[in-house]
Length: 118
Length: 112
Image 1 (cartoon, rainbow over the protein chains, first blue to last red):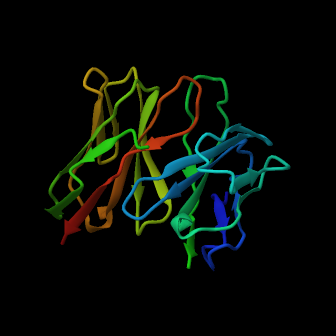
Image 2 (image 1 turned 180 degrees about the horizontal axis):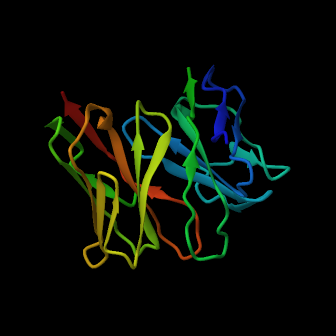
Image 3 (image 1 turned 45 degrees about the vertical axis):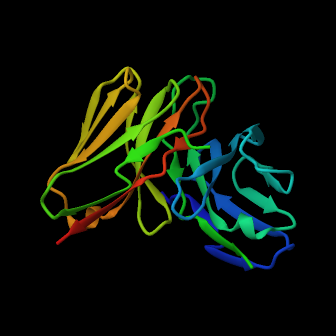
């Protein structure tokens, strides 16, 4: 029963570069979420997948951010042309399901990837 | 944008004392959850209270919810040094939607 895992744990990149952050959800969880947390703040929602499709991407800040989940399990968050303001901890979470059920399932969080853009 | 506000932003107490943290939110909710975070990394789910519930207990944790005041409180009884962490409330604001909206958190320090 492994929890949510994220790789890498730390990523340092230069302004303008492209980065990919990976999330492995808990086995059997159909819902997957990405959040971003800046220093001293609470996490902010980015995108949510139910299965392979993005059910809600309203939190993505701009078109430099994109996420995929091609097989309904592992997800990759992709950031193009990184900017210093993208520096944050990127958190991934998964939950069993609950789409359209009207009830919220507990979201289980991974340890996060700390992204630093120089 | 953040939905909730935690109060206080920081709290320091002696081991063994009770710690109370408050959360206020702005819009109608389905549920409210409390999470703990150590060292700015992974969040640990503590407790979920549904909008039709008023109080819930889990071990040393007691959560209350007042939907008329749009507020919640988290009480940790008999605090321990290991309770030192940041505590966040999170709400889901639309029926069936899954995204959580977090507050800015309360930084709790338990002094031995």
